[in-house]
Amino acid sequence: MWSTHILDSARAKKKQAREQLRVRLLDAAMQALDKLSLLLQFDKAYVFGSVARQQGFDELSDLDIAFAGLRDEDYFTAAAFLSREVGIDEVDVVQLEGHRLASTIVKEGIPWKRKG
Image 1 (cartoon, rainbow, N blue to C red):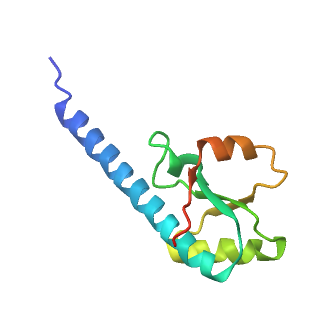
Image 2 (cartoon, rainbow, N blue to C red; image 1 turned 60 degrees about the vertical axis):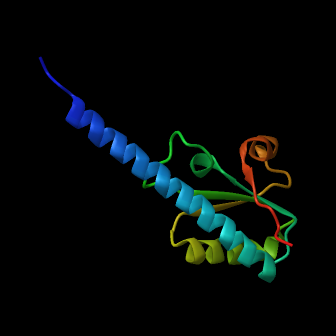
């Protein structure tokens, strides 16, 4: 009879490592948003997508952040800043105003809390 305990253990370790990476990335994103709020004006921000969910996140996942009140001229500055601060190339920035998924992002995303 085959025993899969070694395979099961390896899968569990990999799953745990992915979850730890997701939590670190989420924390880094929130800290980066704190810093960004000192440089650019925006009203709210939400981390959404795979970083906001325990299921579906992996090492190749990008970071999705939605903003309310981010000016158009600050869009690329925000994306570049977040990418540098968090240390990943794949940062997708979304402006909530008029976005077709805005209500879903607000409902399912993790809101950034302004400090102070």
